[in-house]
Length: 393
Image 1 (cartoon, one colour):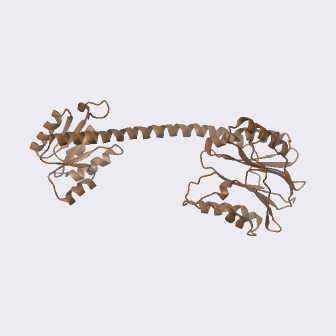
Image 2 (spheres, rainbow, N blue to C red):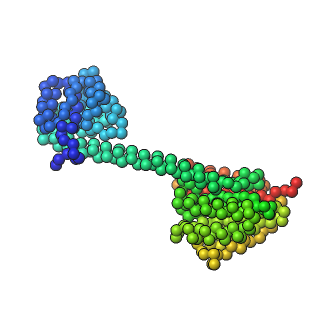
Image 3 (cartoon, one colour):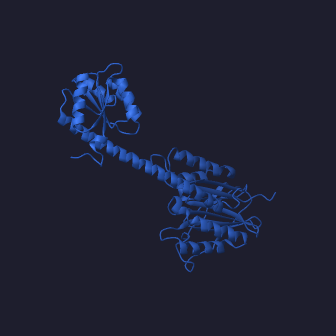
């Protein structure tokens, strides 16, 4: 069998480190007769120096050499090789098992017993050179993957700047809003929008697109553009939801949609108009009673039905001063421990119904979810937001 790839034998450099002049001459003669390029060293120190300067493809090392023995030289050569696999074959007359094991532990790959056999030498060179070529192919592929990944991350970073400018153009920094968003990838499949209407209401939308990363975030940009544009013109939450649904239905591919909850909170009327489709229902924490009232979520997600079939009517909920509306994506309930256990609805409901002061509920939930996840990378975007009805004082 011929050597892998188009290299000729003369292109293959073999370092021979042998303190015996006779053995060194014999091995050099065999290798040159086989057509290989040979580099000679008389001891371990010279072998390390020659390896560093010549970068041979294979190394033959005598075990017992002056100045630096073969095992110590092998350790240094292996360190200099780094990720590149350089086969090291020990030249030895040793026969006891422990000595041979020590040779392998020092970085050797095989043994060549004295006296030398040209057929065995040729077979070992071919076998190890094929292994070296496969290793170099793997390194080239790894480097190419890393380069492509770097380019992808750079492109995503630029795209994310545009994405963030579009989706973060509202009023999420108001003191009555608490929010937590943890993305699984560079792009968040969850989207949170808030803006003030000229009618005196605060409108908010929490959305969760199917999938993760860039494909899931693509729909967020037209959604955010429609939301902010219509809120600032004074459109109702019903009209906004209907417009967003129609746009997503027309543009998103089959199987991609947005679970969402949209809220119109009127400070003057002390009420919230809420439309929900596909997201967990969420609810209102009644501050005086310290009880949690779950909302209804009976609609299909945005982008599933045409506007002729779509129900865009919100439901009205009265909200007193100090009451707080809580919304979350299914990433809260599905947050997993490293071993796979989900946070679950029971844990969430226990925190919502613990009777804690309303100002502590949000932080209690997020802290418990983060503790539950621990060092896990997670398998979904995690989002939660609360919106409080402010005091008139």
